[in-house]
Length: 58
Length: 471
Image (cartoon, rainbow over all chains, first blue to last red; front, side):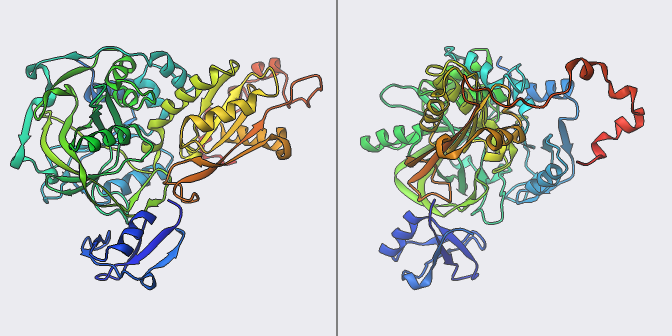
């Protein structure tokens, strides 16, 4: 797993994380949607690095 | 007819009463069953629990009760193999021999009592559970996924986590290092989807056989571990090209796409962390068949139910590999304290000082998950964490007894790794071979230990309350 990449759901504002491979996919493909594990809805994450808090799982 | 989960539970209630708990009160599919199990575990109890009334994702009471924590006790795993806690992996090695399967007709296959195909299939009718707070949704966790190698025609079995994304749609996760992926790549190269079965619910010996680490036709090893030829019957989707276990509780027939992926995870894993969200292969369900009185089996992720099932098989595999080079190996144990995968304790009767590090190297390279190994002498009980750590404390000097191996293949679920490689290591916690004498362990004269009986010194009511006396 190594480094994980936190994202915030645009709909419910809760945070969870992606593994590195998926993070790289959304950086290169802005149309890739994610599924929030809390509200269960699909959302489009911000494609820029500023939208994500990068770091290891705590 | 093969023994199955129902026979196992019936015998368990007869021979080990108190190991099966039945709950009649209604529960929902989301979090409640895991919460009840966790409360029971906090009281240091590990019964099998059968939930008779579970509300499914359609909001209806499922026709199938849920069984959970079937594998939550090493005693019960040993009971399934007619073995003991300490001999379990050794007996597994002895039984891990191929026994050809037999094919039976539909009339003898209880898994065919109810058949649903195509539009009739609705996964949400099953009482599939959502376990942990940040899980993306309901997961099948006790599914033994069967796939057939298109070249050798061997069947590979693996318990894989499967996200239920729709009425007939799932997303499956498998590690790139697994045999399942090796076979998946063959179908990908052929440009074909991979036919698969998800087998839910059978005798624990079936599951232990299906978890063999040998790369062979695993249906035959299942027969060896069960002590009887495994009965198979043609599937609804592929007929004789892919046979299903005839006495399983539930079989889902599905195709794993080699071209389409979808979102899967987070999911709470055996490391007791959540794995990050990722893209994984989509699975389209073609048919579901089950017994009329089927139980829906669930494995509680990250708990003893999950950790203990694989341990004897890893122990058996490591034991065989080490024995070929270090004949004095006495036992291998994967402790729950190390997630029953990441740590291995090896007990040896040493004849030279090179044997411990040789055993460490073999163990670390034999299973990608094994990360730390401790080797101890045969006077140390490897089933007791305190004893093993005492050996590390008093029989190792790390400038010479520590092995560190960076850049090795590990599990990507280890949050301390880089996702591809991890650093593995081992400690030689054995006494040096002669000629130098080593300090002597404490002991009380054995004739006194045998003569002194607690019953002669303590009242019966005090002895009965012993569990209330703390350390």
